[in-house]
Length: 118
Image (cartoon, helix red, strand yellow):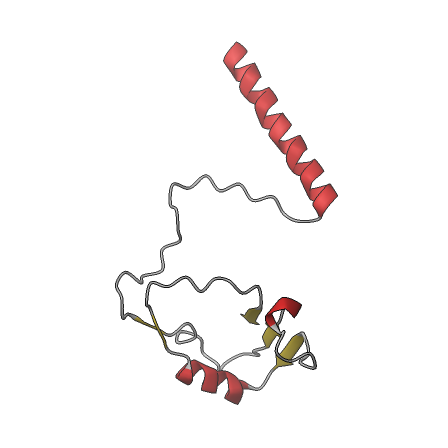
């Protein structure tokens, strides 16, 4: 009974701390208890070709692409807007056919800018 009471107190404390975190920072608190270090991408050898948009069907539905640039990523051109929006499916199809990347094992996750396609 004592172990159950201790576990309940710990669980309630975590919930309270998560609530305080969320209200103070307005950012979600993510607790990942998985044993995987990195997500499974299907890329496991150098030279693998990656086409991130290949499974999207731009012929059906309404599609919108949002490009959100962080100021520190646009140092070369101060006049570039920090957000761009496009509903042009021909542009999305062009991106789909031309965006082929080759896995080299390099770490390129140093930019905070993002592209969101919905």
